[in-house]
Image (tube, rainbow, N blue to C red; front, side, top):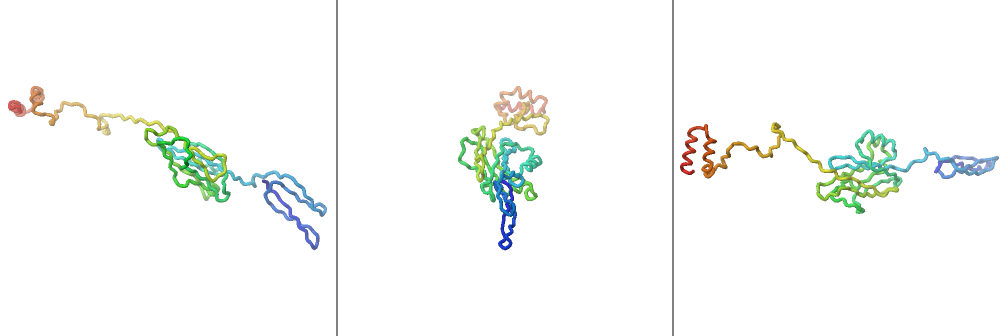
Length: 268
């Protein structure tokens, strides 16, 4: 399409004079009307396109991941029209994001268009056992209006669809996730995008125990000592360990040794 000017010719019935008026519009060919010696002459030609006058109806969808924790990510799908503004936004606000995919599209509805990510689609060719796909809102839609406003004073945050992706601790969790997400409401060569993640290896935490650390692990078994547990001293043990008991009580009070001898004498 081209920006062109049409001359409309009208003739005054009383004077016979012809009047030319201009009309600016968009067309594929330029028809030039001239008045030559009082006669209307038609010439036809092609106008060189002026890109500044032709609005761009293409939008860009950008897919990013942000690692939240081990085996847990936040997927962001953002739509923009002004790519330069978006690049500045990403550099300033989200330097830690991992880029995945870019798509180009136009909206089916040129006035009230939207793009929807269908996260509960049954069109899954690959198993996602042990994985959770959790959208932050339903339906997950991003509108043309927000994409047009982004970068202005009315909308400083890029329109984004957020999805939390995490793997469970189950033994049969799939090692790799390849989850299909169909796109609705747009014209594009891309019909669906895929959430791709891989299971991270389990981390082994090693704890060093210090005998002088006040935070030492108290679950460790106590070291062996020469302390006698009173609950374990039975009459049979006393009789069988008479010599050792006397040795153990050596240096104690005389009354204690005497009492021990009387107990053994009475076979207590």
